[in-house]
Image (tube, rainbow, N blue to C red; front, side, top):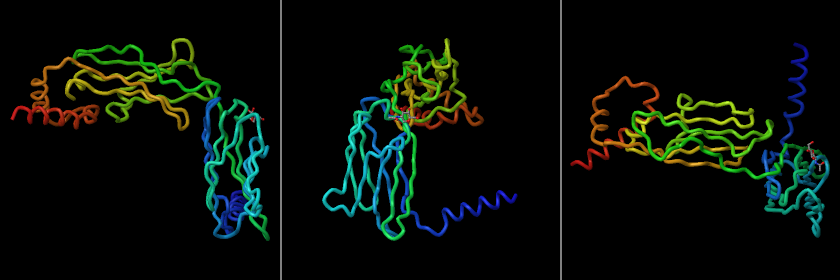
Length: 278
Ligand SMILES: *[C@@H]1O[C@H](CO)[C@@H](O)[C@H](O)[C@H]1NC(C)=O
C-alpha cells in the first residue's frame, strides 16, 4: 500500500511539472541484412532550446546534431554495422536512414536529447530493432485447386516459405475480397515436423463463393513487424447463376452467423443479376 503510494509519487515527480523535450522515437521492430531502416526522433522546443540530439546503438554514439555548432552541426561516426544518412531535420524531428544493415546492427537504439543552458536536462528513449539474415518471402499456399463444386468446402493452407526463429515468427492472416476472415473459417495447424512450419488454413463453403458470383479473391498475408507480404488465389466455383438468386430470395432471415459476412456479396450478386434480367 505504502509502496504503491510512493511509486505513484515518484511517477508524478518524473512526469509532472516538466514539459517534455523528447516527444518520442520511431524504430522498426525488424529490418533485413543488406536493407534499410528509417528511425525518427521527435522533440518539442516550446519550453527549452535544444543543445544536442544523439543516436546510440548499444550505447555507442553514431549520430550527433548540435544546433549551436554552426559550421558542423552534424557528426556521423562511421560504422561497419550500417551506413547513416540524415533523411530530414527540422525544429521538431530528426529522421535518419540506416542502410547496408548488418545482422550486428540488431540491438538497442536510443535517442538522447539535451536541453540548452541553464538546465542541460537529458531525456532519452530507446527501442529494440532486430536485423534478420534473410529477407521475407511471400507465404506459400498449399492444396488449392483451379475450380471447386458449390457442395465442397474449399480448404487452402498457408504457411511461411521457410522456418523462422521462434522469437521472430511472422503472423499469418486470411482475407477474402480484402476483408479479414473470421476465425470460424480459419484453423491454425501445427507444423507436420515442428512449430516453425505451422500455418493457417482457410475453409470456405463452396456455396458462399457461388453466391458471390462464382469467384472470390483470397489473400494470405504474412506480417513481421511493419513488413507485409501476401500470396493470392482466386477461389472459383462452378455455378448456375439463376438458381442462386432463387436460393437467396427463399432463404430468408435467421441465417447462421457465418452467413452475415457474405450477405452484402450475396445481395450484390443477386442485384447485378436482377438488373441484367430487366
Ligand atoms: C547489440 O546488441 C544486440 C543485442 O544484445 C546484439 O545482438 C548485437 O550483436 C549487438 N551489436 C553490437 C555491434 O554490439
